[in-house]
Structure formats: C-alpha cells, structure tokens
Length: 209
Image (cartoon, rainbow, N blue to C red; front, top):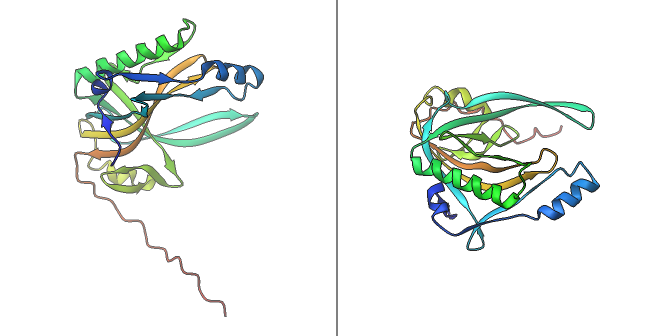
C-alpha cells in the first residue's frame, strides 16, 4: 500500500494535530438534532494519519454479532463482524492513552466522555462490509462474510495479527462523546487461511428464443 502506516507510538513521537469544526457541529445539532455528530481528522504535516496495529487475537477469531436500533421510529437490525487484539508493544498502549488525552484537551469540556480505543491494551476492530464482501483485504484477498467460519478454523485466540487502518476522531453532540474511529483496510493473520471458494455463477444471460 502506498499510504504511510504508523504505529501508535510512532504517531505520538511526531507533531500531530486534531482538527474538527466543533462550533459549527454544535450549531448544526442545535438546529437539527438528526445532525448529531461530525468527524474530524488526525494529521501529521497536514496529511491524514494511518495507523498500524500489531498484536495477538483476544477473541476466538472473527466474531459475529447483532445490532438493533430505532431510526425515525422504525426498528432496524443487522449484523456486524469484529475481532479484538492485544497490542504487542506496551508503548502503543501508552500512545493511545496520549492520543485520548489530546482528544480530551481538544474538546475541552468536562461534561464530555472521551473514549480510549485501547482498553488495557485491547483494541476492538470492527469490519465494514459491502453486500457480502469485507471492505478490508484479509491475508491479501477480498473475502466474503460467508467465509468467517472458514477463517476461524485456523484463526483463534493468540493468533498474531497486523492491522493497517484509517483513524480519525469522531464527535457526538447528542451523547457528548468523542472517540477515535479505526477502520481496517488490510488485515494479515499469521495463519494460512483455507477458504472454501464461492460457487461460480455465470454472468451471461441465456439468449432469448
């Protein structure tokens, strides 16, 4: 990948900035509470930061869960996929503490809750997917959510993993909460994945008679 991915400890050793228009975001929320949050940016030398996470799995592979919420009075449900990793280096855990403190100073409001991505060195990674395909490359391939069981036959607790991800601050005026979002773009498990290929379906339509 062409982007420069940095360990959390490498980010905090450089001059980084957090940027967001909190004043405008609050105005938008006051006018229309459906506009409850905004995203900001984490930058070094004016360019967005990308993060590299090294660790071992603290979940038994990729975990499938269910979510439910209400949107405009209508219930919505769906699935999500995630895994948790234990950071290999203690300095990366400390770096997340530093970044969280910096986010708190940026918000500068004691009523806000500031969420640390690291919980005693554990970082939760949610996997985005479009249709049935994960957005991240997993061991070099675009895999389907239907392959989770296949992945988990060889990936489990203590499997080493490297995650390359986007990272940016997010602010919810409704919940008065700030946190860093981490979205994986590449995941490398230290395991040989045995994936059952999806059945081939021809894209050609039968000729009309």
